[in-house]
Length: 287
View (cartoon, rainbow, N blue to C red):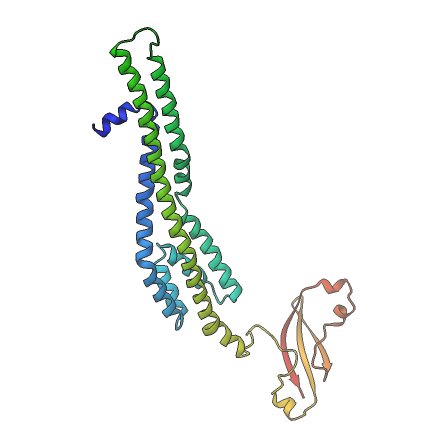
């Protein structure tokens, strides 16, 4: 007996079952292509990005950008495209990108869960309709002939076919779903390991050496002479003067030998005029 004949004998509930089967197969093919591309290329991408990150972050970002069609490329690119981030910001960018990629990896899960839940119910519905047909064609006590017996057998066949079809579709969908869940769980661990190694490289090679070198920001203005200043080393007394800008006008505040600076008088007194914008424009030492 051909599959087409079985399909017709299954009754009307076989048509929605066919739709669920097509959706399941389409989802399986799409996810198979997604995972095939990711699993066959991600090791190479991670290795190249991590190797480049030890010497040149821009080169590492370029490699990740070239591979951003894959989840691992977008994940590694998110922190690398930031401009001099702190380690906390670096990690936050990776976690945010990872959450987005994990959502994409779970694409199709809801569809498969729906098929697993609905397919057996459709099979049960077909069983009920088949039994209804069977009992309608039974002529109890009427001495029905072979025609009635044939119709009753057809109803029983419909009930059994739809039940089997529903179970088959549900089993296939559940199997595909479990395989995808295993892949997703492994990718979570893989992304975590790759992200941790990239963050460690950033901390040890790029962030901590710059921090430990004691370099000051080019935008900061010292209010006291450095400890190794020749002025302090020679014991020269003088005053450390800071030039302030108040509403575009200069106002000089001085503090003799105190190593600090003071605001103009109207700002020290806390009057209404103290709401004017103040910026520090220059700092000099006068002996």
